Image 1 (cartoon, rainbow, N blue to C red):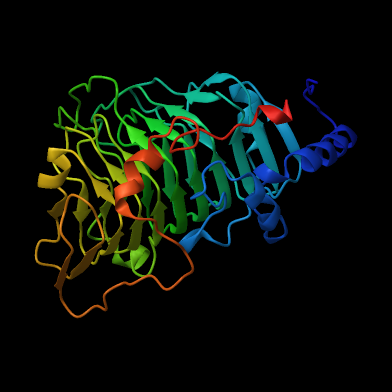
Image 2: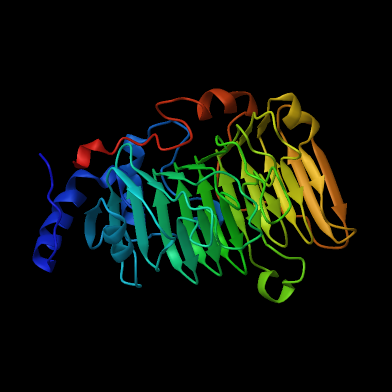
Length: 365
């Protein structure tokens, strides 16, 4: 059975009821849905819900459901602050970045991609500027390749002052200025089962860096204490930084950042995790498997400013605690589970249930 696109409120209500009945295992994770979702977990290690700093996120919560297949439809569906659950179908090409409002779930149907191949001020895919309670799931996001334009907010996903955002089971590739940046007081973020990589040969750009294959910047300035102090708190679980990644996997300023069961297997790292000013990082049961990852696991960008980092239970690098200053070491106290680091590679690289857009959503078509 194929669903048509719907364009009035009565049709939306009918579609919403039908979709909700058959997709409870792939909902936007309200508390009521969590027990049902556990029955259809694609991996025994995957809870299919946000955890840690992002555990309160509900997104569109199965309200105002639509299916989109063009950039115009997508832009309209994710605008504003009314709750909406938007399914993306097929391949969508953008000519400019799309602004995402609050209370949205953007979910890829099986094989869905969104690309923006511009190498100019129109680059980037999703911009969340002051948006709250947003879910982005099961999508491949394609940029034009690393090109140092020395500009902010042109990443495949850019969060600016946005809170309660969950990015799950995505494959984020070749962002022009970065793959996914979290800046200017953004907070309460969960990134899970997501793959980051660079496959396109980088271009030399205006910013002076010929190899700007940098993934995730958390905090974009040392001078933004007024915005970032007490914010930029993120949980990364079962994420995979691999082929082509040079650094910022992630690079952290100010925030408390928890990395659980993440994989580093690339051969291009200048460094994996960057410790910036006032960063407070807990790296738990991750796997550093390539020689480059083992040799270049950490980079100190603090310039003698306070920071903390704990490495616990990882494979490929030793346990270590590094600290400067008087700030209390961040140790996660929220509910979560971590499996043994020796399993990380096999679990995350599984083509059917690992990191990336591996959720099977064809059942709603």
